[in-house]
Length: 272
Image (cartoon, rainbow, N blue to C red):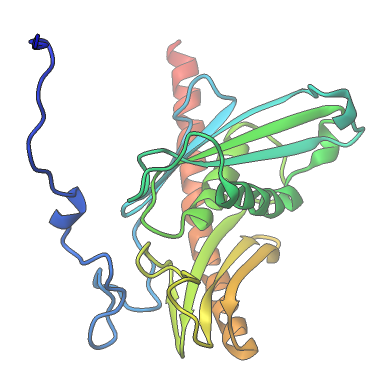
């Protein structure tokens, strides 16, 4: 039988790269009041934001929250493609997608039901903040790609997409910041990791769920709230309040990232 000498044979045995991780992915809270990553329940992960990364797009942004990495590109305003979608009021479209390599289990190239649901939630969070009447007969397209999912991907996407819209010069009433909280019993975990997120197939007891909030900080208005699971009203109210306070603290970070991107553009224009 002929042998293909050009093909490199792989190793006989393999191990998952996640087996080398410092923290056990199945552990969400350790003994005491600390979580698996060392944070307290009311602490969020370190945040990194940058705008204007994708030169081909009208506006773009990138966000990192430890191992959660999201990138967003904004195109438009441009002409409405389909005549049935024509409207005197501007349109905003959002597409949320996990990269095939972003999760522990490989994702498909086409959007699945979860990604379509996240796209709708992302649109509901961003639409109240955009001045749609400023670009009639046109549409603005927002494309969000999760490069690595380590929890709270939707909240990170809301923040990233709002920064990308502002970077694109789209007129907005305010920026939008996102924050998630996991409720389990009497404990509220802000900015949950992938192992801490609510999974209905694994947890069925009461007071177990998650909340995601989109906030326009300078207007102090909530643009969107989504929840999963079964949560007591008072506990849900407290979780939402904690998310709103966290969104307020994130607002200066977005402003600084936008200011840095604007200064860099002015500097490039002067040198060019």
